[in-house]
Image 1 (cartoon, rainbow, N blue to C red):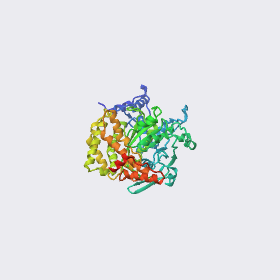
Image 2: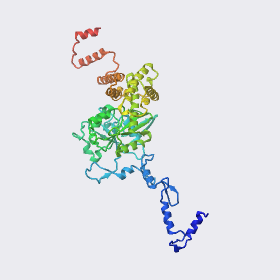
Image 3: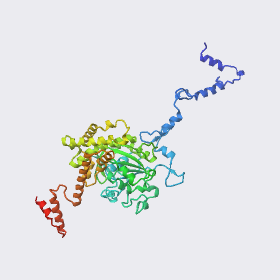
Image 4: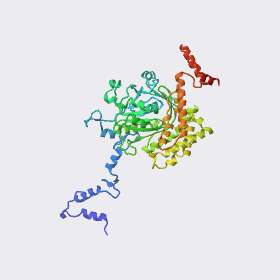
Length: 512
């Protein structure tokens, strides 16, 4: 039986009288055409054979997927291997809201990031983002807090217009930030009233596309109301705060219309940062940031908005932040994990005026741990939004929550909780968004969280005493109520006003 090579040789030698023309190499034109078709034929694996008969993947599909795949720097890489910043958005483009009805005016996504709040987290984010290659422009929005001690333009100039971060005793100073005052009394969304930013910024520059909110949870609505008229549906707000429940207040009071509401990105931060100066912070403990998009409608799967994609990529490509993206459900679990830990450490350290580590190895504190975590576990495991999520009962078991809380307190033993810092600074605490959130969600489901309610009231009383002492410029540890009464009487007598004499009942009480 003749081989394939012998049969091929005979075919190439077949006379041209048979209607076939041979080329110089002996291959007929019909053979070349069949060979060309064979080179383009798909094999059983769904791949193509190129001119050299090597198996390759579908080049068009592979090239398209590679162009869309983010590289380690959070950018898109094209087929030639060149990295471009936001290539997909730049090539596709998006309509500018400043040109209604004009579908031809398109531009790249604005890269400027505004930071609302110059606390420890805001300084940490600005300092970290300023240290990456091809850093984005960063603008501090000031004048949004009740106290202008650290947010005035004069203080910014006195600080050298720079942000300093201290880590392990080493100081790193970074510059190149912009500082924009915000009018305190202009709270309407349409910009009614006195809005100084209109006179200095163009309409396009005045819009805010990428906003990081790092103020305390109680100040969220007040702070956002100053710039709400500069946000639109294409804007993205990134919330980096403790506690839960502030988004419901923002939606109810500032953005009730779901169609015009900005996009929300939630971040759960575990870094330990303490502000030690107007624009100086200390990075006391390394941690991570869990970040993800918040759907407009719970449970819906919407395409990632361009500005949300940009801010998530920028944060995740910043090495010092150690940010990891999560799906909405997984991100909510991260929030609840931190909420359970903060509901124990923050209020107890504020009440006992101690560091995190001093809560450990104390049997009296341990009993309070168990009571708080038992209530918190029951409330979280009963949440309707977690129905059907696997492993919820195991993840939020009281014994596991206690183990995680003790591990966190051990790791941050020398740290001072943010709630204790607020009490010492005579500021409002976030207790309504930590233990208060647990109490509210429990009431919605018919669960009474008595221990969390008592702790919440005690922290409010402690914070109120601290603020009253600061207003009266008196020491917090007064001997008794008579001392305060005598000091007030002395103050009135110095001003020429005599206090009212005590009634007989009051005098009898004082004697006893």
